[in-house]
Image (cartoon, rainbow, N blue to C red; front, top):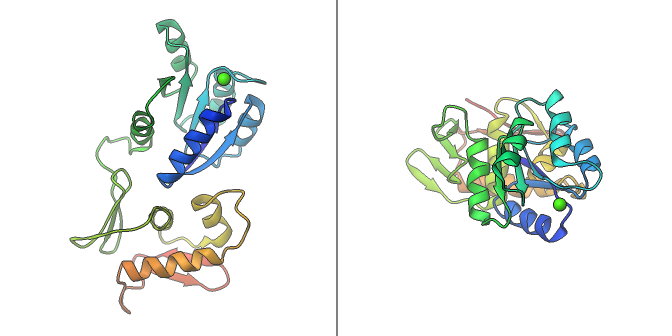
Amino acid sequence: MRILIVEDESGISNFLRQGLEEEAFAVDVADNGREGLDLALSGNYDLLLLDWMLPGMSGIELTRQFRRDFPQTPIIFLTAKDTLDETIFGLQSGANDYIKKPFHFEELLMRIRVQLRGKEGTEERLSLGPISLFPERHAVQKGEEEILLTQKEFALLEYLIRNKNKVCRRTRIIESVWDIHFDYNTGVIDVFINSLRKKLNLQKDEDYIQTIRGVGYMAKEL
Ligand code: CA
């Protein structure tokens, strides 16, 4: 899951980036509205976190322009403005939720997870053969057995399962699971894939994570 933060106070954006990366999100940051809109319109993001008052273009204007092309992507405002009128204005402009500064990171994280949850409101469960992955709880099971994964292993497995039965190219994996600015030493993927296969204890007849030689990997339903 990739999140774009548009925030001109570097103290806040650094804090958010670090916290979200520790939760296995991939994060990009823009410090002004115009750059934020350009990045957002790339369509690479699962959610936007927008400051209200930004140089270049306000969070409200950014939202209006973004919404023309992306009606569904969740947007959460980070705002010091908290009067009722302004909040309603923000939500009417196309945001899904807002959080007032100063805020607790845990509360923001909860709001992000609510926005990213499937619309039905039940806990999302991704499956691949006997493997189940629960994004909200960061839990993975094989059958009844709990599998403990690191954040990156978890993010990698989530990415592969969300793209099940499709070939995932190495560069796309890196961009989604690591950082867009990561130097392209895609060999790191192999290390994590090996570790995932070990932890999931995949046997010879359980080739759920397949190597597509020269291209990447594929989570395959057998
Ligand atoms: Ca600001």
